[in-house]
Image 1 (tube, helix red, strand yellow):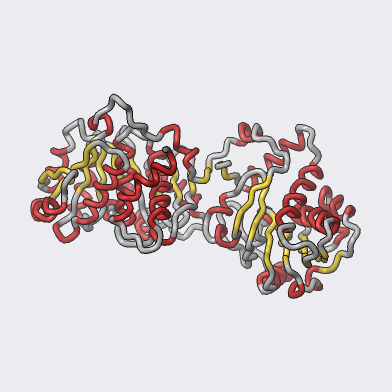
Image 2: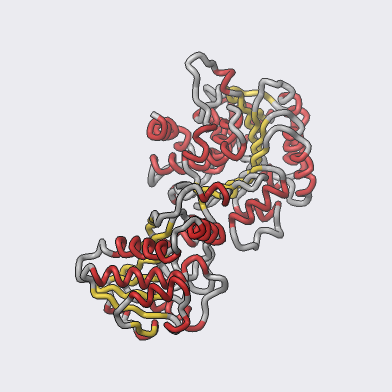
Length: 490
């Protein structure tokens, strides 16, 4: 279940299911049962405080309250708003609850073993304030295990952003499919452990919805991932070129080139300025080395049609020289990965970069972190919603954009996007991004499409970090890839 559905898309899935003959209250009862099942992991007889809101999220809470009471739990229920104002399925659920309904502010949360947040879920349209914000603060201060229904109240389901105040849940149960807000930060942290419950919505509704955002998982890109052939040879697996910076900044290129080899490229070459030739030669074994005199030298190297991809940016430094190198790479027929200084070199002329990308047939992947992204897309940097920012950047630039972070987003110009949530914190180390750019370059050399290559690179990068664990450094990451491949493919 890798599809990520916005709140609007989830509403469309609900509506389609209801039109097909399943009553809305049937869906609500299934959702409430899923919540009750999660809460029932607590010992029988535990004190459960359920806070219900004025909409369908509150209706799920009423159903869960009834079921938990029937199972032998001590349930108290508080309602934010007036019971008489409940409508539709939520009113039906409230009518089936025979226990007392207290004002939300009157609930003794300090006495509860579990607090269920059924206030707003993903349907929230504006920041929480007043009594709603006070209730959220009281939930967070309760000291009990907190279970959120659908999404912690106050978290935006489309962006993961906090809307005024937000519940900090230990566990969240959502229905049918996860939403972007479940995997984007800070929403992912506020959700705690995420469970996705089947409430009777059939997968066939996805055909009409046509979701375009996905959790970054093997299933997303596996069919495009290069598989070595028994009768193949190294030239079938592509030749990657990585452009080196000056001698004192040449390590980034070497790490990227090694990552390209480890992920399956048949050959890798470092294009090196003269002053870095001795430094690079002293460290290279399987990776080849070619001298390069500036942008003209790189352009000459890339006239060789056997060179399938080029990575540049790591360790290059800024200025016109770097910009000229990028122009030379984009003027070739090779796939290009732009990282670090290769992106920042166009901070004064982003439209010039976009024009170069638009004029070529081979793919381009850009891999900025937030700072580099802001240099190229300053008007987008302050916008809420990492997913939306990356998508607009991809549309505007014509490149596949990988916006780094613990919730790395890969966005294609065609609107598809993936969100990776498997990166451990250990990846926040010098050179980690250089390795990622080399991995993506190695996949592009093997003719993997840009969106799939960038998504696979981000996912495998995270898995390599998890395999290595605490204490890893960037040089370790390429060496972990064989173990990752064994876990995933063998």
